[in-house]
Length: 265
Image (cartoon, rainbow, N blue to C red; front, top):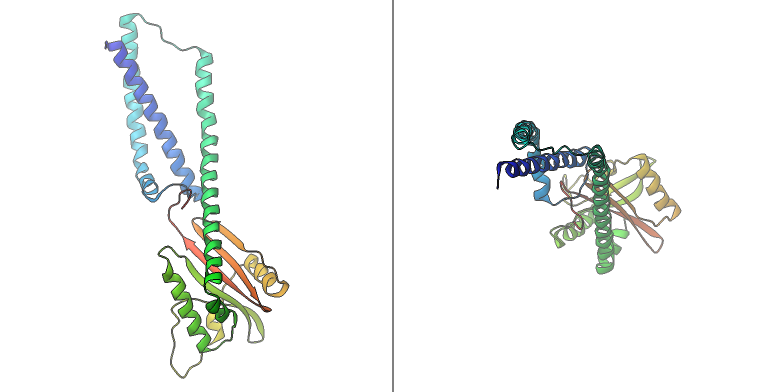
């Protein structure tokens, strides 16, 4: 392999490395800014090291500059003319420019598929709870605000949570009156009794909600709306799953959070 071939090979390796680095930084910025969940955990963690990509890009630019100078020397020595035509240069730049929106679209597509997979998993978990534990589900459905029901509910939810290692957090939501005002109450695991003599207070269980959530819960409890509500944002997944039986209704609320994501996670 002569000097001319070595210079061409080094140029190809250098240019390809710079292009891959630009893509790498672009993907990292897109995922970080928009909170996309596409890759596995180890791949996501690797992105954090791409901060060094800026320094590598600067170093790569220097190497490219040196290599082009070597190319000029080689061309002068061998009396070569390897200047590409303008049409070829435009084609290369056009392909390079178009590739970015394509990659961006693929990232959003991966994030969408991850969210849909998580939605299916949460809905499947909710149905499994209802169908495989009818007695426990009926106990949750027979809501009465007293210490016995609250403790029993906490125990049932704890059993649900420990059934599967990757089982998300679950909460039971009901509607009740607090100081003559309608409010949504949420009950989770780890119920703590203050004392044996002080009864539980409803205001301690009021669930903070957004307007969109309140509108949805009002439709469920007062209009018999039985559609689930799923939302995904910045790696946080939420599912409201209404359960109707014998004129009674509760809402099972599932939430899960992951710092990384992959299609099928």
